Image 1 (tube, rainbow, N blue to C red):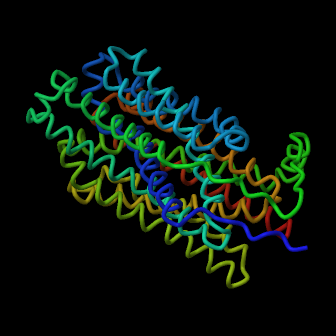
Image 2: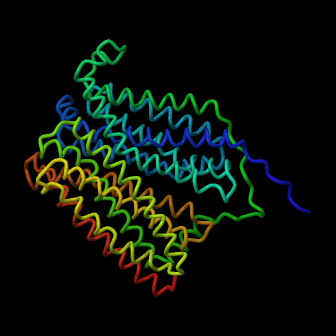
Image 3: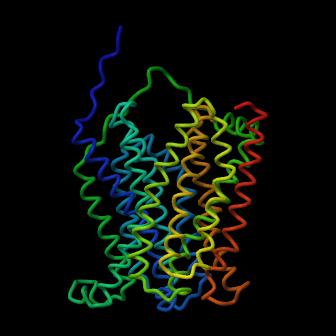
Length: 433
C-alpha cells in the first residue's frame, strides 16, 4: 500500500521562515564581528591590552559555541526547533546589548560567552527546519540562501559598524533613550542586539513544521560505533580535520585583526573600513561559496571525486596574498587584498564539507560536521586571534605592526594546512575513495 502523499507547508510560510533564518544568520555574524572593528576604543575604555581583546574575540565566544554545538544538535532533534531558536536568538541578542553596557573586562567576557551559547542553536535548528519545510529536491536553494547570509554578514557587519560609529560620533543618537550617553562602540553593540530581538518577534509568528519521517527505520550508531569508524579511518580523517582547523587559525586570526591592521598601519578611520572593506568582503564572500559549489559539482559530474582532494591541497596557498596586505602601498589596495581571502576560505569550507558528506557513512554525517565545529572553534576561533595578539605584543613589540603579526601567524598556518590536505589526499588514494 502506498504511503499517503505528504503535505508540505505553504510556500509563503516556508519562505518566510527562510527569510527569518537568513536574517538571524546575518545578525549572528554581525554580533560577533563588531568587536573586530572597535578594538582600540574598547581597549582604551576598559583599560585592557591586545591579549585581553584576543580572548574576547576568540575564547570568550568560542568556548560555549564549540562545546554546546553537539548538545544543541541533540536538542534540535527532540524539542521544538522554533522555540529553541527563539531562545537562542533572544539570548545572543540580549548578550550583545549587554556587551555594549559592560563596565569591565569580566562583564564583557561573560556577555561574549552568552553570545556563543545562544548562537550554538542556530546551525542545527536552521538546517533541520529547512529539511522539514521543503521536499528533498527543493532544499538546495533555501539552504544556500541561509548560508549566503552568513557569508555576506562579515562585510555587512563592517559596513554597519562603520556607519553607526560615524553617526554616533556626530551625535546622531544623543537624544535616543539609553543610547544618548554611550560611547560610539557601545551604541554599535546595543543597536545590533536590538535588531536581533526584532528577528525574535518575527519568529514568534511562525509555526514549527512537522518532522518528516524516513521511509524506513534508520538505526542511529552508538557513540562507540562512531568512534570505532573514525579511528579505523584516522589516516585519512586526522589530516583532513586538522588541515581544515589549521587553515581556520589563519582565517579567524586574520579576520579578527585585519580591520585594526588597516586602521593602525594605514591610518584610516573605522568609517573607511566600513565603506571599503565591508562591500569588498561581501563581494568576495558571495563569490566564494558559488565557486566552491561549482568546483565540487564539476568534479563529481566528470567522475573525478579525487579532484576535491587535489583542490584542497593547493587552495589554502591561494589565500597567502591576503595575509600580506600589510605590504600594500595603498589602503584601498590593502582592503581589496584582505577581502580576497574571504573567497578562498569559503571555497575551502565548501570543498571540505562536500568531501566529508561523501566519505562519511550517512548515519554519521551529523557527527562528522559537529567535529569540524568543535575543532575549528577551538583551534581557529580561540587560538587564531590570540596568536596574532601574542606575535604583535611579544615578538614585534609594536601595536602598529599587527599586519606583520597576521603574516607571521596566518602564512605558516596556510602552508601547514595545505600540507595536511596533501597527506589526506595520499591516504584517500590508498583507500581508493
